Length: 374
Ligand SMILES: *Cc1c(COP(=O)(O)O)cnc(C)c1O
Image (cartoon, rainbow, N blue to C red; front, side):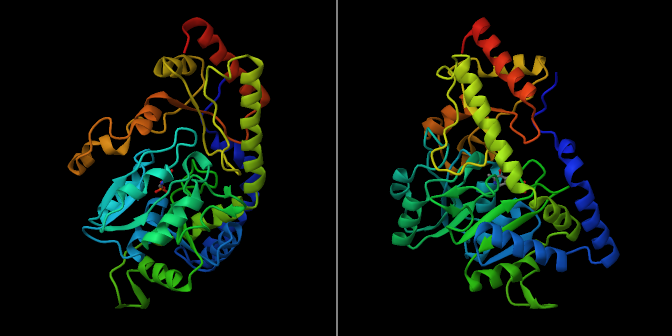
């Protein structure tokens, strides 16, 4: 048996007809950048995320960058986020000359610890980027409250979390901006790069739309300096076709997570492994991440020898990356993030996993524990 981390071709079977129809339509229209199919996707994503507007952009990274630009973040400003996230969250802040100010994560959700945010706020702080890591919303109420009291912009990094909820509210609808990615490994992935920014303020919407096309509302007349952050029509066509299946795929991911939890319990190893907790439902499980006290890399090697493929998201927290040494953070600065980087492992959780594959993964982990301990 073979268990890949993600089996994108396995999802083709269902969707290929719908995708081809949209791709044909784009080819025949001759409009390959922005245009009606991008607008249709924007409306549907806004609707899905419970926001008034959405703007299609070139990637999740660019969704973050354009949001920070629209929020007026510039040189010398400080933006609060966590060091336990994909690089783009902090990279986008730095690209504008602003400083990422890191706050540690909570042990149970891997998301920013709201109780540690306020002590990091200075006169230069302009924004907070909570990341909904692995598909579970950050604890948004205290974050929104802190932001309001300190007059800070909130940019949700929801790249891994489309469709996730916090007290009934959709990710991307709670902050001033919601940033999504259509990278192929995300829950709603295209056949290439793409992204989306969601918002409910008309002003913010107009600003982001203008920044997307080099800061012009009227062609060749530029009010502000933007960039090329446009979404391709072909990608929009793919994502639009797949959006119709997103909820059933998310349900499958959630069922797979339940199955893993159940199988680990039946084997009596649920307490040795720390299983992912759904603290703020609805978790959409872009990743199913377990923790082991020791032998993490050895376990990963053992699984790989048995054709089970896993990943570490992420092996080195951002405050310890070479490119951020200038920020002056030391090892030990964010103990929970550093711990998570050393003891987490993401198991395959994609919707098309079979019961046999799920059982096989849990059996092999059980076998490893009996042999080597964790
Ligand atoms: C994937 C991801 C991004 C970046 O999205 P791209 O489309 O790859 O540029 C940003 N933040 C997080 C948390 C991500 O997982």
